[in-house]
Image 1 (cartoon, rainbow, N blue to C red):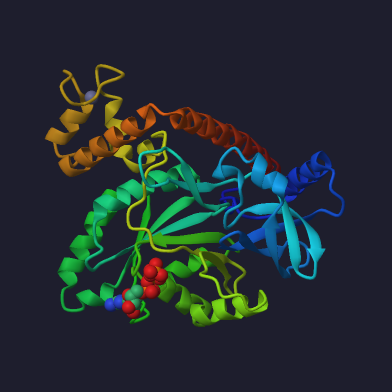
Image 2 (cartoon, protein in one colour):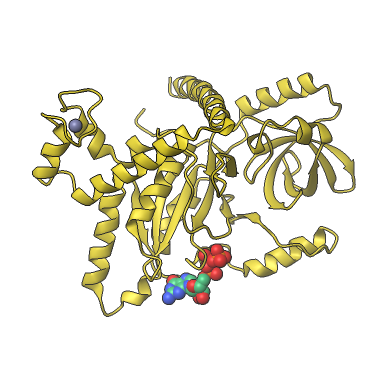
Length: 375
Ligand SMILES: Nc1nc2c(ncn2[C@@H]2O[C@H](COP(=O)(O)OP(=O)(O)OP(=O)(O)O)[C@@H](O)[C@H]2O)c(=O)[nH]1
Ligand SMILES: [Zn+2]
């Protein structure tokens, strides 16, 4: 069968059910319920209860909070969790189920601590404005992190209405971005003129879960408003009033479209601090890794070695000089963080290794599912 398997990093399926049963048994809790984190505000989480599709509010059990090795063990938007009912619509969150994708950045500052942003996203839409926000080099940095998350990146350039009289310039800019994101689909939209939205619609038809990320003011909320057909602000007000009228600043909310797809709106982040072991470099700079196979030395740094395939490709124009510079800069930054001589760098390697082995197992299970499905 040539039909591609649909994305299923987000959905509740038989494997999640199995994991859920296993974790329930391990924890020994009675009446466990599965739920998804659809909103975060401070210590409180908004939940959608798996089986009944109702919403509730969740707080962490003391055990989950105190036994957490790092913030990676605590829930984030998109997570599937095991909860028990307290009373009314209040629930206790006992455990985060294994994740199939996880977007993480490094917390600001010199320490190497992870700051998870969202989990179990099928796609992550990276929005960049065609106004003063425009900076293709910054996309490469975030793409490293998205590729490592295991979600599929999609780039959306916003505010194309600013180029109504300058179509040639617009085309050039889009072309520059395409070259900075090989293997990634690139779209351009105008929220003000409602242009370019139809091309994106295919992404919300499959009941998938996506996140919008990008600088503040790039137009994430405006685009979401168009997609859900109502003002997000008013949606938040409704939600705040049904969580007992408490007025807190909302951090991250997921919104359900009519098609059943979920979209997570995140607060603006201009530049993502890398929490990466460099594995996303290859997907972000595929042309460099491809040419590196022609280098004489396997560990060639493509700087001063003889018979360097990458240098040859730069000389012949096959690899752009700019892209190569950007690659080197990001690689050096990654090497610096990985070498930070703090206990955190040990923690970093451990956490990364843990996440990788979980993902390997997920991938194996996925392949098995696909084999069974398409047999
Ligand atoms: N010209 C133009 N302006 C837009 C477009 N989309 C949004 N804007 C404007 O950009 C500003 C920010 O839009 P938002 O949708 O609030 O941006 P955001 O990404 O949600 O910002 P944060 O919530 O701060 O992360 C507003 O003044 C919008 O009117 C667009 O397509 N074209
Ligand atoms: Zn080389």
